Length: 303
Image (cartoon, rainbow, N blue to C red; front, side, top):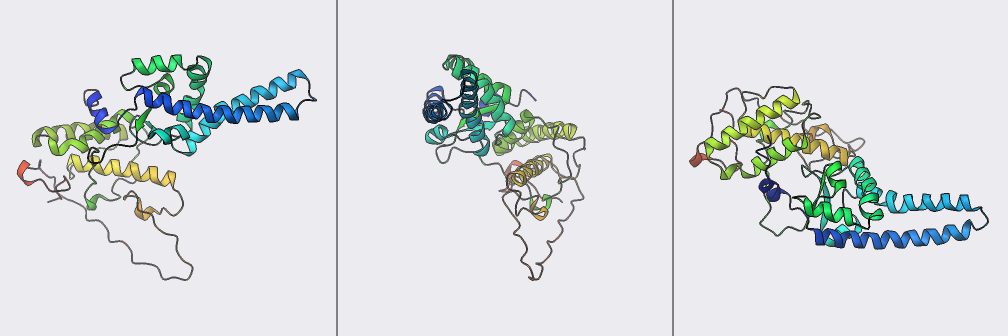
């Protein structure tokens, strides 16, 4: 799998932020956080003037941890990787596979940021970013994250083709917890570039990736589905689960196989809508698509 996840492939899908833009975003964040910290410290000093020195020191340490450590972690968690400085510079923190970060990612980045940024005035973070091929500091390395550019010129982004409609919801029961981020990234890179590959090479890569994915999920890949369509359907299922976790309200199981589709809450007294038609089950395996007869979606329907 390592030979499929190259630096060139990562650069095409995720555009790592350069050190100057990251430094500017960090500077803006620190200005805001230190301004809040100074205001909180002045307020605590005035409110705790009657306390002894030990209590004042304890409150000062607590304010430092809450404002300069806890607030950045909370902001990155709630905004899915976008602080004020990053929004101003068009940056975002994402996982290695391009997905949104969670609390544990922000916690690791914030905890190591105390040593990398606050205690060493950013020297360790700058050195780590210069040494890393993708400009990651130690917090990003240990958290499995990457700071990327959100403002990408139009026409330079790559589109991940959706699976055929007859595969919607086919893999809703698949266990995806053991699939590593590197494998997800390799699958995404293949799906975005498969139209540019030779048909035989594309088929061989799809078979290899489908085998690796089936090994991680513990469920054999269906033999009646083209491997590229199988990969796209599993990626869509993962995106749908991420959407349900991010937006749990109004997301029904009927739209589990379609990302971005949310079922509205039923209206009391209203008649039920028509039931969705069951997806047809393919029965025959499909041969590799020919170069001259490749459909616009990138996949071939079942025979």
